[in-house]
Image (cartoon, rainbow, N blue to C red; front, side, top):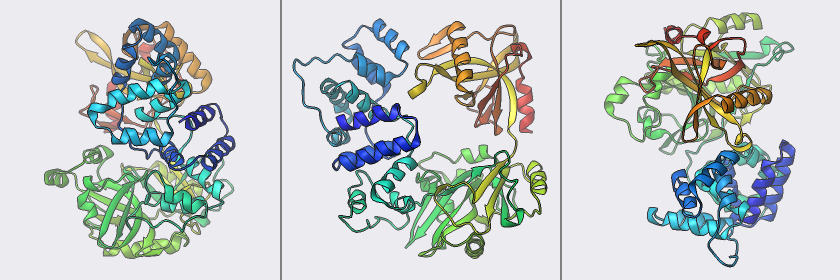
Amino acid sequence: MKAFADLLDRLVFTPGRTAKLTLLVDYFRRSPDPDRGYALAALAGTLELHTVKPMMLRNLVLERMDEALFRYSYDYVGDLAETIALVWNGDHEEERPQPRLGEVVQLMQSLDRTEVRKAVRDLLDCLDTSGRFAFLKLVTGGLRIGVSARLAKQALADMAGKDVAEIETLWHGLAPPYESLFAWLEGRQERPVLATPAIFHSVMLATPVGEGDLDTLDPSDFAAEWKWDGIRVQLSHFHGQRRLYSRSGDDISAAFPDVVDSALFEGVIDGELLVGGTSRSGEPTRTFSDLQQRLNRKTVSSSLMQDYPAFLRAYDVLFEGKEDVRREVFLARRERLTRLIDQAPEERFDLSPIVPFCSWEELERRRRNPPDPVIEGVMIKRLDSTYQAGRVKGPWFKWKREPLNVDAVLMYAQRGHGKRSSYYSDFTFGVWTAGEDGDTLVPVGKAYFGFTDAELEVLDRYVRHNTVDRFGPVRALRAEPDHGFVVEVAFEGINRSTRHKSGVAMRFPRIARLRTDKMPRDADRLETLVRLIG
């Protein structure tokens, strides 16, 4: 556990990508199995452990520490795991040997619910401060150390001199602690054989169009497609095994059996999951809020499938049958995809149409005035581009519609995590609506990014000087017509919602700028947001 704890400590304080890669490569080379495999799983988000609730950890530490002192300590440190790691007072008289990461993971995986509390207490007793911090980060389910799954895979590729695409291809067919993967990377074993043929293959991602990105590019070298407001998915079908995956590789087949069972062709296609009617059926495509009725469900009823029929709008093909076509150019893959979709049931599959254009100016006009409200922009793809895992700048771009904006008043604040654990950086904001006693603020969204470090310090200072109440870790802020803090919030879309008090739900809100020039009474009203829904 000590080697993993040291790795986390160093990664937290290492900002550069190259330096992080060096630390990861060194750890993977020096650490034995299964420790390095479990560390890889923790970094990549594939490690499954008994999740320990924060309330249990608070109760454990309060068995040995005064509650007021702990509350002051937590308020000063800002991160629960780090606070407990620092203040924990073991009740043993002599030091115990530090367990290895593999031993800790295997122990936690073997416990039933009644044994978790005692095991956590015993491990906190025998671990040192860094070990406790690493352990608590593992069991609470979030490392937040600036290492993505992609970076961890790149470290494996650098360690073995492999192409990261090879590792991406194998990744979702393997499971922690990845011993066969490391054996192959070190040349001790042949390439791993995957457990199921219907595996997930890492998707190709587009780069947002930035200032001047298109100026030097010839429009005739690119094709454009509409970017639809659903969720990116991958459908895989081999030897009778069908799976539907989200963009990150989560298996969502159980929530969409109507789509999965309709995949009569064999292969792997990439597309957008939507609700409503396909272009082939003539029925309109419905909004993202309709799609949300089907998301995150373990099972789905026949009435729900009837009320919210799902379908897949195909963007690309990775495999046609057993043939890997990812190294073919876009136009060749498009021909293959057209053949596959022509064979598929028309109520469950259609093809994302090509958007004709001759210049970037013409494409921008089309982007600003799309033919369907469910379109959120355009995808721009080089005609000769191969299908590459990850976000590679150049082959594919996404040019989303301009964000919507609203001026809102900060209502609540909470501390962030990791490097932001000492700052109030997570904010709830609201707009005005008519109430029984006059205008009142109603919360309409939350945001924790979009501002600069300098702006964060301004926001944090405001929170500390204008808190009027506390609810656990949440601070209620002074928010009145003549006293409060106004921010401009940018968001990608808005839908009606029965789960929110305001009746609306924003998509991807972020704080675009601080409106220190504006009084709270001049912030926007709920009626303005409702009108945006149409």
